[in-house]
Amino acid sequence: MIVAEAVGRVLAQLGAGPVFGVVGSGNFHVTNALRDAGVPFHATRHEGGAATAADACARMSDRVALVSTHQGCGLTNAVTGIGEAAKSRTPLIVLTADTPAGDPLNNFRIDQDGLARAVGATAARVHSPDTAVADTVRAYTTALHERRTVVLNLPLDVQAMPAPPLDPVAPVGKPPVLQPDPAAVTELAALLTGAERPVFVAGRGGRGAAAEIRALADACGALLATSAVAHGLFHGDPWALGISGGFASPLAADLIRGADLVVGWGCALNRWTTRQGKLIGPGARLAQVDVEAGALGAHRPIDAGVVGDAGATARAVLAELGGRVAPGYRSPGLRARIAARARWSTAEFTDCSTAELIDPRTLSAELDRILPTERVVSVDSGNFMGYPSAYLHVPDEFGFCFTQAFQSIGLGLATAIGAAIAQPARLPVAALGDGGFHMAAGELETAVRLGLPLMVVVYNDAAYGAEVHHFTGDHTTVRFPPTDIAAIARGFGCTGVTVRTTGDLRHVTSWLDGPRDTPLVVDAKITDDGGSWWLAEAFHGH
Image (cartoon, rainbow, N blue to C red; front, side):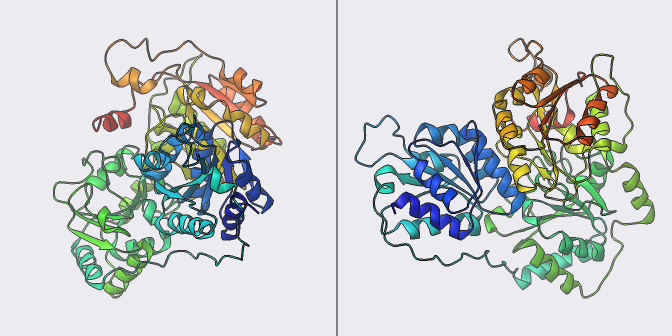
């Protein structure tokens, strides 16, 4: 057994996977070792797709997923996806070959450690046959316990060396639950006791703690919202407002802005979640709960901060309240208003559809009506992205995958592939703009080859809509001739349909009613929306 095989076997024993990648000479042996040990391998057409699919799979499954790349160019091809995962604190290991230390003129040679650190990932390395197991376990532990994206470099000369006999490795358990400091719990409880209109906003750190946060909200009368990445966490709760920030409905925005106390649960309360701070009322007090002290007050001053697990902190604060129950922000009348108007899909609008183009609001609302409830929605970046995010219901926090920390377009299709593999019992839906579709179209072949029942909806305005709508000047650089995306999809083996009117959605219904044995690509020719207001808000931060 060589070192490359030992690394693969150790990761398999630890429960890592699945693995996504593009195999070359440098990562051939470690990839096959993983496969031989039973770890599913999914070949993508580009390393960028592999990194993003693995990122999405990890987010939607709570497992440490793997990426496998060749040295040098294989790693650089994956770097945007790695940067997205690192910024999102996704527990991910990138297994990448590296050139031998004694070969400085190798064509593939780059500073791979420096590259990893440059995009926020943790650089790690297998140093020798004697340390290979420990190096691999340490990388896995870092990814799992610290929620880090780790780039584990495997130098070719070390990979090929004989490995010592491999003993079973001890399992690496989940990190211990971080209990909050009692004094901080008392301080937060006091703020809640004094609040008349509290609002809780849960982020990525609140995933898995919905029940505890809801119980505390019930006791103090708080309304519930999420950041975009935690969308679905409070699905079905009558006091849930949906996403806070740019995608918030007018009613949700008004209620959040009217809060006298906003508590972030594993939520950064950054510019996106607060609309550049405009959703924080002038007299509102702010509190944050996070497992990292450095996250508290990082984006705006806070009145109280608790270092601790969201669920453990919510339980501790509820106990501190001692059975006290207050109406807070809640009333029967407000509950009815939330039910009637909290979602964009309930808002009235003038349908701007024509005989040739469909209004993206109409499209999204109709898709929400006809798609099955059990779905996992992945959204690319662009002017269109608010429509699927705001209009498509999701059943829980594992029903929405939002790879937007790097704000790169072109990640949505690979995101949907990873989410589909993580949640095979749900209909995977990818919402893309035409720009993002063309960037990633090669991964349609991956979806076909893997047999995924994937539905891809392309909001097609034949442009980079954000630049057209939000920047003045010559737009010829960001407008494009019409393309037949449905025909492109059929060329990859997908079912491709063009939608210009609601009547054309019968083709979607037919596919849903059928065997779904090929992915469906919907080329939706949409009307000009004049520029999404949520993106206008976002560009204030550029």
